[in-house]
Amino acid sequence: MKMEIVFNKPYQTGQEFQNIQESLTSMCISGNGVFTKKCHAFFEREYGFAKVLLTSSCTDALEMAAILLNIGPGDEVIMPSYTFVSTANAFVLRGAKIVFADSRSDHPGIDEDAIEDLITPRTKAIVPVHYAGAACDMVKIMEIAHRHKIMVVEDAAQAIDSYCLDAEGKPKPLGSWGHLSAFSFHETKNIISGEGGMLVINDVSFIERAEIIWEKGTNRSQFFRGQVDKYGWVDIGSSFLPSDIIAAFLYAQLESINHIQNRRKEIWNLYYRHLLPLQEGGFLKLPSIPNFASNNAHMFYAVCNSLEQRTALISFLKMNGIIAVFHYQSLHRSQFHLSKNDDVYLPHADHYTDCLLRLPMFFELSNEDVHNVASAIKEFFDL
Figure (tube, rainbow, N blue to C red):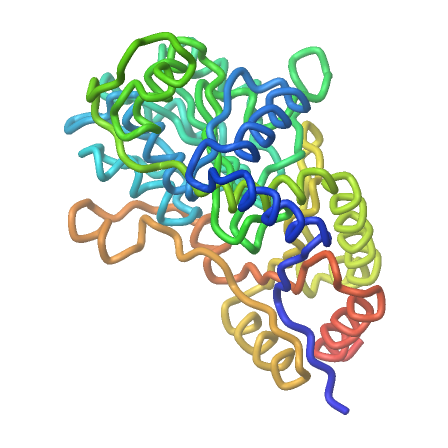
């Protein structure tokens, strides 16, 4: 019988339905209910974030960040080209020009050494993306940003429970470095709520306005805390709050985060051990975790030697019942960007666009599944 190994399978801990039922009986299932507050408290307690606000998506969190930074026409925002379109869209919607940086040669994350040459008097923000949950060099990025008085927004969509070493060599959670940060709880992430995201506010000067933007431009949160006797329209904003039902699902995941993370790391390490001979033989490259970064096992990818090799490998795996997929199409080569900007040469981003391959990676993937995927890849290379 032909095996079938899907690319992703959303994991449920078993507590989600009970939490959702509790939310329903609370008679408050709109945003900022009981479970929303529980999720906020979890992140602020466990990771030391100054303030968090759940959002309907990571895209929403990035859009909130762009509003908070007063991004507007004429401003420039530096980010990697090898990222999801939301990273750029959030700032383009405010009128900014996106300045794309190349990826590192050893990792799809932004080339930190390329950032400074891209800074101009119009640069308003730097947006590092922690690809596959592995940190960008945040010590270096924050030093550049501080020296040039530029804001930093971490796109930590894939980076829950991941860390970067600080200047003293101590691990500091991703999402706690930038002035603002954005996380995703999409069904493909380690911790999920179907759709969902979170804005992290580390610069406390943004907290009051962030709540207003989050509440459609009103001071409703202050009203419910008894800080004002009525609430009204005081700023721009939108409906960024998720339902408390979504938060109830998310909280069940957070209660099992250590269990989830431990299993994902087992799967990641098993892939690495099985596929290491292919890297040693020069057939492909395995993920490289920078020495300042931790591995949260969000993704297991391999970098093929060419587009043709990757295309053939994807087809071969599919014929064998295994779904493996490519990832981002670098934004500097997108139709939208090229219609408004000159082309730029970013060879590493182009290489990852053509050659990076993501393998099945989810909590319920069995050791036998990992073995079968690795065996099929070895068969493709006649090993």
